[in-house]
Length: 521
Ligand code: XMP
Image (cartoon, rainbow, N blue to C red; front, side, top):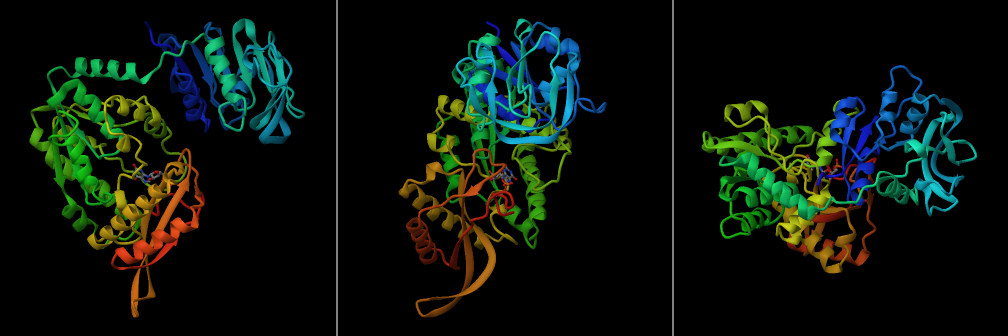
Protein backbone atom coordinates (compact mmCIF):
# COMPACT_ATOMS: atom_id res chain seq x y z
CA UNK A 1 0.00 0.00 0.00
CA UNK A 2 1.28 3.45 -0.90
CA UNK A 3 2.43 5.45 2.13
CA UNK A 4 0.17 8.44 2.72
CA UNK A 5 1.93 11.77 2.83
CA UNK A 6 1.17 15.39 3.64
CA UNK A 7 3.21 17.98 1.78
CA UNK A 8 4.16 21.14 3.65
CA UNK A 9 5.06 23.99 1.31
CA UNK A 10 7.47 26.37 3.00
CA UNK A 11 6.96 30.10 2.47
CA UNK A 12 9.61 31.06 5.02
CA UNK A 13 7.56 30.55 8.17
CA UNK A 14 9.31 29.99 11.46
CA UNK A 15 6.89 27.26 12.54
CA UNK A 16 7.25 24.87 9.62
CA UNK A 17 8.95 22.21 11.76
CA UNK A 18 6.20 22.52 14.30
CA UNK A 19 3.59 21.91 11.59
CA UNK A 20 5.52 18.83 10.51
CA UNK A 21 5.68 17.62 14.12
CA UNK A 22 1.93 17.97 14.49
CA UNK A 23 1.31 16.01 11.29
CA UNK A 24 3.62 13.24 12.45
CA UNK A 25 1.83 13.20 15.80
CA UNK A 26 -1.23 12.11 13.80
CA UNK A 27 0.98 9.24 12.60
CA UNK A 28 1.01 10.63 9.10
CA UNK A 29 4.24 11.01 7.17
CA UNK A 30 5.02 14.51 5.89
CA UNK A 31 7.76 16.38 4.12
CA UNK A 32 8.63 20.06 3.99
CA UNK A 33 9.50 21.37 0.52
CA UNK A 34 10.22 24.91 -0.69
CA UNK A 35 7.38 26.93 -2.17
CA UNK A 36 9.21 26.82 -5.51
CA UNK A 37 8.49 23.08 -5.93
CA UNK A 38 7.00 22.58 -9.41
CA UNK A 39 3.40 21.44 -9.79
CA UNK A 40 4.51 18.34 -11.71
CA UNK A 41 6.76 17.34 -8.86
CA UNK A 42 3.91 17.85 -6.42
CA UNK A 43 1.64 15.64 -8.54
CA UNK A 44 4.32 12.94 -8.55
CA UNK A 45 4.60 13.02 -4.77
CA UNK A 46 0.87 12.23 -4.62
CA UNK A 47 0.27 14.00 -1.30
CA UNK A 48 -3.03 13.39 0.46
CA UNK A 49 -3.05 17.05 1.46
CA UNK A 50 -0.99 20.22 1.24
CA UNK A 51 -0.30 22.72 4.01
CA UNK A 52 0.98 26.20 3.13
CA UNK A 53 3.11 27.65 5.94
CA UNK A 54 3.24 31.18 7.24
CA UNK A 55 5.96 33.58 6.18
CA UNK A 56 7.23 37.07 6.88
CA UNK A 57 6.20 38.71 3.57
CA UNK A 58 3.20 40.53 2.15
CA UNK A 59 1.41 38.75 -0.68
CA UNK A 60 0.98 41.94 -2.70
CA UNK A 61 4.73 42.59 -2.72
CA UNK A 62 5.87 41.40 -6.20
CA UNK A 63 9.08 39.94 -4.69
CA UNK A 64 7.28 37.80 -2.14
CA UNK A 65 7.11 34.00 -2.41
CA UNK A 66 4.06 32.88 -4.31
CA UNK A 67 2.48 29.83 -5.91
CA UNK A 68 0.53 29.07 -9.04
CA UNK A 69 -3.26 29.35 -8.67
CA UNK A 70 -3.30 25.89 -10.30
CA UNK A 71 -2.03 24.48 -7.01
CA UNK A 72 -5.60 24.84 -5.78
CA UNK A 73 -6.99 22.90 -8.77
CA UNK A 74 -5.07 19.67 -8.25
CA UNK A 75 -8.02 18.14 -6.44
CA UNK A 76 -5.81 17.84 -3.33
CA UNK A 77 -7.07 19.43 -0.08
CA UNK A 78 -5.08 22.53 0.90
CA UNK A 79 -4.80 24.25 4.27
CA UNK A 80 -3.23 27.72 4.21
CA UNK A 81 -1.85 29.02 7.50
CA UNK A 82 -1.22 32.75 8.14
CA UNK A 83 0.74 33.91 5.07
CA UNK A 84 -0.46 30.72 3.38
CA UNK A 85 -4.07 31.74 4.01
CA UNK A 86 -3.50 35.19 2.55
CA UNK A 87 -1.79 33.67 -0.46
CA UNK A 88 -4.75 31.37 -1.03
CA UNK A 89 -7.10 34.36 -0.83
CA UNK A 90 -5.01 36.53 -3.14
CA UNK A 91 -4.28 33.82 -5.73
CA UNK A 92 -7.96 32.88 -6.01
CA UNK A 93 -9.25 36.42 -6.52
CA UNK A 94 -9.79 37.66 -2.95
CA UNK A 95 -8.19 40.77 -1.48
CA UNK A 96 -5.48 41.14 1.17
CA UNK A 97 -4.85 44.45 2.92
CA UNK A 98 -2.62 45.87 5.61
CA UNK A 99 -4.32 46.58 8.92
CA UNK A 100 -3.43 49.72 10.85
CA UNK A 101 -2.51 47.54 13.84
CA UNK A 102 -0.95 44.10 14.05
CA UNK A 103 -2.64 41.25 15.84
CA UNK A 104 -0.01 39.38 17.77
CA UNK A 105 -0.04 36.69 20.44
CA UNK A 106 -2.90 34.91 22.18
CA UNK A 107 -6.15 35.90 20.50
CA UNK A 108 -9.72 34.76 21.07
CA UNK A 109 -11.36 33.70 17.82
CA UNK A 110 -15.09 33.28 17.31
CA UNK A 111 -16.01 30.25 15.23
CA UNK A 112 -18.86 31.29 12.93
CA UNK A 113 -19.43 27.94 11.25
CA UNK A 114 -19.60 25.14 13.77
CA UNK A 115 -20.47 22.82 10.87
CA UNK A 116 -17.03 23.37 9.29
CA UNK A 117 -15.14 20.08 9.08
CA UNK A 118 -12.06 21.92 10.37
CA UNK A 119 -13.80 23.11 13.53
CA UNK A 120 -15.84 20.05 14.40
CA UNK A 121 -16.16 19.93 18.21
CA UNK A 122 -14.12 23.14 18.67
CA UNK A 123 -15.43 25.70 21.22
CA UNK A 124 -17.28 28.70 19.81
CA UNK A 125 -14.73 31.00 21.44
CA UNK A 126 -11.30 29.45 21.13
CA UNK A 127 -7.86 30.74 22.04
CA UNK A 128 -5.45 30.91 19.11
CA UNK A 129 -2.03 32.33 18.34
CA UNK A 130 -1.91 35.19 15.84
CA UNK A 131 1.01 36.97 14.27
CA UNK A 132 -0.01 39.21 11.37
CA UNK A 133 -0.54 42.73 10.08
CA UNK A 134 -1.99 41.87 6.66
CA UNK A 135 -5.45 40.36 6.65
CA UNK A 136 -7.96 38.94 4.20
CA UNK A 137 -10.31 41.84 3.44
CA UNK A 138 -12.37 39.94 0.87
CA UNK A 139 -12.55 36.17 0.51
CA UNK A 140 -12.46 34.66 -3.00
CA UNK A 141 -15.63 33.57 -4.75
CA UNK A 142 -16.92 30.25 -3.49
CA UNK A 143 -15.40 30.77 -0.01
CA UNK A 144 -17.23 31.45 3.25
CA UNK A 145 -15.82 33.03 6.37
CA UNK A 146 -15.76 30.44 9.14
CA UNK A 147 -14.19 32.41 12.01
CA UNK A 148 -13.40 36.02 12.96
CA UNK A 149 -11.91 38.23 15.67
CA UNK A 150 -12.81 41.83 16.48
CA UNK A 151 -10.00 43.08 14.22
CA UNK A 152 -9.74 40.23 11.71
CA UNK A 153 -12.92 39.71 9.70
CA UNK A 154 -11.71 36.45 8.12
CA UNK A 155 -9.74 34.58 10.81
CA UNK A 156 -10.64 31.42 8.86
CA UNK A 157 -12.28 30.74 5.51
CA UNK A 158 -13.06 27.72 3.40
CA UNK A 159 -14.45 26.42 0.16
CA UNK A 160 -15.49 23.00 1.41
CA UNK A 161 -16.56 21.86 -2.07
CA UNK A 162 -12.99 22.26 -3.34
CA UNK A 163 -11.53 21.19 0.02
CA UNK A 164 -9.64 24.47 0.45
CA UNK A 165 -9.22 25.74 4.03
CA UNK A 166 -7.36 28.64 5.56
CA UNK A 167 -6.65 30.01 9.02
CA UNK A 168 -5.10 33.37 9.78
CA UNK A 169 -3.97 32.00 13.15
CA UNK A 170 -1.36 29.31 13.75
CA UNK A 171 -3.06 26.05 14.79
CA UNK A 172 0.34 24.34 15.12
CA UNK A 173 1.46 26.49 18.08
CA UNK A 174 0.52 25.18 21.53
CA UNK A 175 -1.02 28.55 22.47
CA UNK A 176 -3.75 27.70 19.95
CA UNK A 177 -5.47 25.52 22.51
CA UNK A 178 -7.60 23.55 20.05
CA UNK A 179 -5.17 23.88 17.14
CA UNK A 180 -4.04 20.26 17.23
CA UNK A 181 -7.68 19.16 16.91
CA UNK A 182 -8.10 21.43 13.88
CA UNK A 183 -4.99 20.03 12.20
CA UNK A 184 -6.14 16.54 12.98
CA UNK A 185 -9.51 17.29 11.35
CA UNK A 186 -7.73 18.54 8.26
CA UNK A 187 -5.36 15.58 8.04
CA UNK A 188 -7.69 12.75 8.99
CA UNK A 189 -11.21 13.93 8.08
CA UNK A 190 -10.63 16.27 5.15
CA UNK A 191 -7.57 14.62 3.55
CA UNK A 192 -8.76 11.15 4.57
CA UNK A 193 -5.47 9.91 6.03
CA UNK A 194 -5.54 6.73 8.09
CA UNK A 195 -2.40 7.37 10.12
CA UNK A 196 -0.13 4.54 9.00
CA UNK A 197 3.24 6.03 9.93
CA UNK A 198 4.79 3.99 12.68
CA UNK A 199 8.32 3.33 13.72
CA UNK A 200 8.19 -0.44 13.69
CA UNK A 201 7.39 -0.57 10.02
CA UNK A 202 9.80 2.30 9.37
CA UNK A 203 12.61 0.25 10.90
CA UNK A 204 11.70 -2.87 8.92
CA UNK A 205 11.28 -0.98 5.64
CA UNK A 206 14.51 0.93 6.15
CA UNK A 207 16.49 -2.20 6.93
CA UNK A 208 15.15 -3.81 3.75
CA UNK A 209 15.90 -0.71 1.66
CA UNK A 210 19.42 -0.43 3.10
CA UNK A 211 20.13 -4.07 2.28
CA UNK A 212 18.91 -3.55 -1.25
CA UNK A 213 20.95 -0.39 -1.80
CA UNK A 214 24.18 -1.54 -0.17
CA UNK A 215 24.17 -5.13 -1.44
CA UNK A 216 27.57 -6.68 -0.75
CA UNK A 217 29.33 -3.37 -0.28
CA UNK A 218 30.83 -2.08 2.97
CA UNK A 219 29.84 1.06 4.90
CA UNK A 220 31.75 3.23 7.35
CA UNK A 221 30.02 5.30 10.03
CA UNK A 222 31.35 7.88 12.46
CA UNK A 223 29.81 6.90 15.77
CA UNK A 224 29.76 9.58 18.46
CA UNK A 225 27.73 7.75 21.06
CA UNK A 226 24.90 10.27 20.64
CA UNK A 227 21.38 9.08 19.92
CA UNK A 228 21.38 9.78 16.19
CA UNK A 229 24.58 8.05 15.17
CA UNK A 230 23.84 5.17 17.56
CA UNK A 231 20.43 4.54 15.99
CA UNK A 232 21.93 4.84 12.50
CA UNK A 233 24.53 2.24 13.55
CA UNK A 234 21.85 -0.07 14.89
CA UNK A 235 19.79 0.12 11.69
CA UNK A 236 22.81 -0.47 9.48
CA UNK A 237 24.04 -3.26 11.69
CA UNK A 238 20.69 -5.04 11.37
CA UNK A 239 20.81 -4.49 7.62
CA UNK A 240 24.38 -5.47 6.77
CA UNK A 241 25.95 -6.91 9.95
CA UNK A 242 29.72 -6.94 9.84
CA UNK A 243 29.83 -5.04 6.57
CA UNK A 244 29.28 -1.99 8.79
CA UNK A 245 32.47 -0.47 10.18
CA UNK A 246 31.99 2.01 13.00
CA UNK A 247 34.69 4.45 13.94
CA UNK A 248 34.33 6.12 17.31
CA UNK A 249 36.69 9.05 17.64
CA UNK A 250 37.24 9.70 21.34
CA UNK A 251 38.33 13.32 21.39
CA UNK A 252 38.82 13.28 25.13
CA UNK A 253 36.02 15.77 25.60
CA UNK A 254 33.35 13.23 26.50
CA UNK A 255 31.54 13.02 29.82
CA UNK A 256 32.94 10.81 32.57
CA UNK A 257 33.20 7.15 31.45
CA UNK A 258 31.25 7.92 28.27
CA UNK A 259 33.87 6.54 25.91
CA UNK A 260 33.84 3.22 27.76
CA UNK A 261 30.04 3.12 27.74
CA UNK A 262 29.93 3.58 23.98
CA UNK A 263 32.50 0.85 23.58
CA UNK A 264 30.55 -1.48 25.86
CA UNK A 265 27.41 -1.16 23.72
CA UNK A 266 28.91 -1.16 20.24
CA UNK A 267 32.26 -2.83 20.76
CA UNK A 268 33.07 -6.55 20.89
CA UNK A 269 30.66 -8.44 23.12
CA UNK A 270 28.20 -5.55 23.02
CA UNK A 271 24.64 -5.40 21.73
CA UNK A 272 25.49 -5.34 18.02
CA UNK A 273 27.31 -7.38 15.46
CA UNK A 274 29.53 -4.82 13.84
CA UNK A 275 33.14 -3.97 13.37
CA UNK A 276 33.94 -1.25 15.94
CA UNK A 277 37.10 0.80 16.25
CA UNK A 278 37.72 3.28 19.03
CA UNK A 279 40.33 5.87 18.16
CA UNK A 280 41.83 7.37 21.27
CA UNK A 281 42.69 10.73 19.82
CA UNK A 282 42.67 12.74 23.04
CA UNK A 283 46.29 13.86 22.62
CA UNK A 284 45.79 15.02 19.05
CA UNK A 285 42.88 17.19 20.09
CA UNK A 286 44.57 18.54 23.21
CA UNK A 287 47.76 19.47 21.37
CA UNK A 288 45.86 21.34 18.68
CA UNK A 289 43.67 23.06 21.26
CA UNK A 290 46.62 24.26 23.29
CA UNK A 291 46.64 28.05 23.67
CA UNK A 292 43.23 28.46 22.01
CA UNK A 293 40.76 30.25 24.24
CA UNK A 294 38.33 31.81 21.76
CA UNK A 295 35.01 29.89 21.55
CA UNK A 296 34.83 29.90 17.76
CA UNK A 297 38.55 29.17 17.58
CA UNK A 298 38.09 26.08 19.73
CA UNK A 299 35.08 24.98 17.69
CA UNK A 300 37.01 25.34 14.48
CA UNK A 301 40.02 23.39 15.84
CA UNK A 302 37.76 20.53 16.95
CA UNK A 303 35.89 20.71 13.64
CA UNK A 304 39.19 20.51 11.75
CA UNK A 305 40.92 17.80 13.79
CA UNK A 306 37.91 15.47 13.73
CA UNK A 307 37.98 14.82 9.96
CA UNK A 308 41.76 14.39 10.09
CA UNK A 309 41.50 11.70 12.75
CA UNK A 310 38.47 10.06 11.17
CA UNK A 311 40.10 10.31 7.74
CA UNK A 312 43.26 8.55 8.98
CA UNK A 313 41.16 5.68 10.26
CA UNK A 314 38.88 5.61 7.23
CA UNK A 315 41.90 5.44 4.92
CA UNK A 316 42.51 1.93 6.23
CA UNK A 317 39.23 0.97 4.58
CA UNK A 318 40.06 2.49 1.22
CA UNK A 319 39.12 0.10 -1.57
CA UNK A 320 36.90 -1.92 0.74
CA UNK A 321 34.28 0.57 1.86
CA UNK A 322 31.96 2.14 -0.70
CA UNK A 323 29.62 4.26 1.40
CA UNK A 324 29.91 6.59 4.32
CA UNK A 325 26.88 6.79 6.60
CA UNK A 326 25.72 9.64 8.82
CA UNK A 327 23.11 10.06 11.52
CA UNK A 328 21.59 13.20 9.98
CA UNK A 329 18.02 13.76 11.19
CA UNK A 330 15.18 15.83 9.76
CA UNK A 331 15.72 19.03 11.78
CA UNK A 332 19.34 19.08 10.48
CA UNK A 333 18.03 18.78 6.92
CA UNK A 334 15.42 21.49 7.38
CA UNK A 335 17.80 23.83 9.20
CA UNK A 336 20.55 23.49 6.62
CA UNK A 337 18.00 24.47 3.95
CA UNK A 338 17.73 27.84 5.68
CA UNK A 339 21.38 28.67 4.99
CA UNK A 340 22.68 32.16 5.07
CA UNK A 341 19.95 33.88 7.06
CA UNK A 342 20.75 35.62 10.29
CA UNK A 343 23.86 35.77 12.41
CA UNK A 344 26.01 32.75 13.06
CA UNK A 345 25.82 32.44 16.85
CA UNK A 346 27.78 29.22 17.04
CA UNK A 347 29.18 27.11 14.27
CA UNK A 348 27.80 23.68 15.07
CA UNK A 349 29.89 20.65 14.43
CA UNK A 350 28.23 17.36 14.12
CA UNK A 351 30.40 14.33 14.05
CA UNK A 352 30.02 12.50 10.77
CA UNK A 353 29.86 15.31 8.22
CA UNK A 354 33.13 15.07 6.34
CA UNK A 355 34.59 17.54 3.85
CA UNK A 356 33.80 16.43 0.32
CA UNK A 357 37.50 16.51 -0.72
CA UNK A 358 38.28 13.98 1.97
CA UNK A 359 35.37 11.76 0.91
CA UNK A 360 36.64 11.90 -2.69
CA UNK A 361 40.22 11.17 -1.70
CA UNK A 362 39.03 8.12 0.21
CA UNK A 363 37.17 6.93 -2.87
CA UNK A 364 33.81 6.74 -1.07
CA UNK A 365 30.51 7.42 -2.77
CA UNK A 366 29.86 11.16 -2.58
CA UNK A 367 26.29 10.80 -1.39
CA UNK A 368 26.22 9.63 2.20
CA UNK A 369 23.76 7.08 3.48
CA UNK A 370 21.46 8.83 5.94
CA UNK A 371 18.83 6.38 7.15
CA UNK A 372 17.32 8.85 9.65
CA UNK A 373 17.14 11.81 7.33
CA UNK A 374 13.36 12.06 7.49
CA UNK A 375 12.88 11.49 11.22
CA UNK A 376 12.37 13.81 14.15
CA UNK A 377 14.26 13.19 17.37
CA UNK A 378 11.44 11.42 19.18
CA UNK A 379 10.94 9.16 16.16
CA UNK A 380 14.66 8.38 16.14
CA UNK A 381 14.34 7.43 19.81
CA UNK A 382 11.38 5.16 19.10
CA UNK A 383 13.39 3.39 16.38
CA UNK A 384 16.34 3.08 18.77
CA UNK A 385 14.18 1.31 21.35
CA UNK A 386 12.75 -0.99 18.65
CA UNK A 387 16.28 -2.00 17.75
CA UNK A 388 17.31 -2.80 21.28
CA UNK A 389 19.49 0.18 22.15
CA UNK A 390 19.49 0.65 25.93
CA UNK A 391 16.94 3.17 27.24
CA UNK A 392 19.60 5.28 28.98
CA UNK A 393 21.33 5.86 25.68
CA UNK A 394 18.14 6.46 23.71
CA UNK A 395 16.84 9.06 26.17
CA UNK A 396 20.18 10.68 26.74
CA UNK A 397 20.11 14.47 26.83
CA UNK A 398 21.74 16.21 23.87
CA UNK A 399 25.50 16.48 23.98
CA UNK A 400 27.25 18.92 21.67
CA UNK A 401 29.63 17.61 19.01
CA UNK A 402 32.61 19.56 20.46
CA UNK A 403 31.76 18.00 23.82
CA UNK A 404 33.14 19.47 27.00
CA UNK A 405 35.17 21.79 24.81
CA UNK A 406 32.21 24.20 24.82
CA UNK A 407 31.66 23.75 28.55
CA UNK A 408 35.09 24.98 29.56
CA UNK A 409 35.40 28.73 29.32
CA UNK A 410 38.79 29.65 27.89
CA UNK A 411 41.67 27.32 27.17
CA UNK A 412 41.07 23.58 27.41
CA UNK A 413 43.55 21.47 29.35
CA UNK A 414 43.34 17.80 30.40
CA UNK A 415 43.18 18.94 34.03
CA UNK A 416 40.16 21.16 33.35
CA UNK A 417 38.45 18.37 31.42
CA UNK A 418 38.91 16.08 34.40
CA UNK A 419 37.38 18.71 36.71
CA UNK A 420 34.29 19.15 34.53
CA UNK A 421 33.86 15.41 34.11
CA UNK A 422 33.92 14.83 37.86
CA UNK A 423 31.68 17.78 38.72
CA UNK A 424 29.24 16.85 35.97
CA UNK A 425 29.05 13.23 37.14
CA UNK A 426 28.23 14.43 40.68
CA UNK A 427 25.61 16.88 39.41
CA UNK A 428 23.93 14.22 37.25
CA UNK A 429 24.02 11.66 40.04
CA UNK A 430 22.44 14.04 42.57
CA UNK A 431 19.71 15.19 40.17
CA UNK A 432 18.83 11.60 39.39
CA UNK A 433 18.83 10.71 43.09
CA UNK A 434 16.46 13.61 43.80
CA UNK A 435 14.27 12.52 40.86
CA UNK A 436 14.33 15.94 39.22
CA UNK A 437 16.39 15.01 36.15
CA UNK A 438 13.52 13.80 33.98
CA UNK A 439 11.80 17.19 33.90
CA UNK A 440 14.87 18.98 32.59
CA UNK A 441 15.70 19.71 28.97
CA UNK A 442 19.43 19.71 29.53
CA UNK A 443 21.67 19.88 32.58
CA UNK A 444 25.39 19.77 33.07
CA UNK A 445 28.40 21.17 34.85
CA UNK A 446 30.71 23.63 33.13
CA UNK A 447 33.91 25.32 34.15
CA UNK A 448 34.43 29.07 34.33
CA UNK A 449 37.84 30.62 33.89
CA UNK A 450 37.40 32.48 37.14
CA UNK A 451 39.69 31.86 40.07
CA UNK A 452 38.76 33.07 43.49
CA UNK A 453 39.91 32.89 47.06
CA UNK A 454 38.46 30.37 49.45
CA UNK A 455 39.30 28.61 52.66
CA UNK A 456 39.38 24.85 53.09
CA UNK A 457 40.65 23.16 56.24
CA UNK A 458 42.13 26.44 57.51
CA UNK A 459 44.10 26.86 54.30
CA UNK A 460 43.70 29.62 51.81
CA UNK A 461 42.73 28.31 48.39
CA UNK A 462 42.73 29.99 45.03
CA UNK A 463 40.58 27.68 42.98
CA UNK A 464 38.33 27.44 39.98
CA UNK A 465 34.56 28.00 39.91
CA UNK A 466 32.32 25.26 38.56
CA UNK A 467 29.08 26.42 36.95
CA UNK A 468 26.00 24.25 37.19
CA UNK A 469 23.40 24.72 34.50
CA UNK A 470 19.96 23.12 34.19
CA UNK A 471 17.42 24.37 31.70
CA UNK A 472 13.83 23.76 30.76
CA UNK A 473 13.30 23.75 27.03
CA UNK A 474 11.23 21.94 24.49
CA UNK A 475 13.01 22.97 21.32
CA UNK A 476 16.47 24.13 22.50
CA UNK A 477 15.91 27.41 20.64
CA UNK A 478 14.72 29.11 23.82
CA UNK A 479 15.26 27.95 27.38
CA UNK A 480 14.76 28.99 30.96
CA UNK A 481 16.91 28.09 33.95
CA UNK A 482 15.23 25.44 36.07
CA UNK A 483 14.36 26.24 39.69
CA UNK A 484 16.21 23.31 41.23
CA UNK A 485 15.45 22.50 44.86
CA UNK A 486 17.86 24.37 47.09
CA UNK A 487 18.91 21.31 49.16
CA UNK A 488 19.86 19.50 45.94
CA UNK A 489 22.03 22.40 44.85
CA UNK A 490 23.62 22.54 48.29
CA UNK A 491 24.46 18.84 48.22
CA UNK A 492 26.01 19.28 44.77
CA UNK A 493 28.05 22.25 46.02
CA UNK A 494 29.35 20.37 49.04
CA UNK A 495 30.19 17.24 47.12
CA UNK A 496 31.87 19.04 44.23
CA UNK A 497 34.08 21.14 46.51
CA UNK A 498 34.96 18.18 48.68
CA UNK A 499 35.49 15.66 45.91
CA UNK A 500 36.89 17.61 42.98
CA UNK A 501 40.41 18.96 43.54
CA UNK A 502 41.05 22.45 42.26
CA UNK A 503 37.47 23.70 42.75
CA UNK A 504 36.55 26.02 45.60
CA UNK A 505 33.35 27.64 44.36
CA UNK A 506 30.11 26.42 42.73
CA UNK A 507 27.80 28.80 40.87
CA UNK A 508 24.31 28.14 39.53
CA UNK A 509 23.62 29.75 36.15
CA UNK A 510 20.15 31.35 36.09
CA UNK A 511 20.46 32.88 32.62
CA UNK A 512 17.68 32.12 30.16
CA UNK A 513 18.14 31.74 26.40
CA UNK A 514 18.04 34.33 24.96
CA UNK A 515 20.01 36.30 26.06
CA UNK A 516 22.31 33.41 27.06
CA UNK A 517 22.82 30.24 25.10
CA UNK A 518 22.48 26.81 26.64
CA UNK A 519 26.15 25.90 26.33
CA UNK A 520 28.66 28.41 27.64
CA UNK A 521 30.62 28.70 24.42
P1 XMP B 1 23.13 26.61 22.38
O1 XMP B 1 24.34 26.60 23.23
O2 XMP B 1 23.36 27.11 20.99
O3 XMP B 1 22.72 25.08 22.22
O4 XMP B 1 21.96 27.29 23.05
C1 XMP B 1 21.50 24.63 21.69
C2 XMP B 1 21.56 23.11 21.65
O5 XMP B 1 22.56 22.70 20.71
C3 XMP B 1 23.56 21.94 21.35
N1 XMP B 1 24.83 22.34 20.74
C4 XMP B 1 25.47 21.62 19.81
N2 XMP B 1 25.17 20.43 19.26
N3 XMP B 1 27.13 20.56 17.94
C5 XMP B 1 26.02 19.90 18.33
O6 XMP B 1 25.78 18.79 17.85
C6 XMP B 1 27.48 21.76 18.45
O7 XMP B 1 28.51 22.33 18.07
C7 XMP B 1 26.63 22.30 19.45
N4 XMP B 1 26.65 23.46 20.18
C8 XMP B 1 25.53 23.46 20.96
C9 XMP B 1 23.45 22.26 22.81
O8 XMP B 1 23.96 21.21 23.62
C10 XMP B 1 21.97 22.49 22.96
O9 XMP B 1 21.28 21.27 23.09
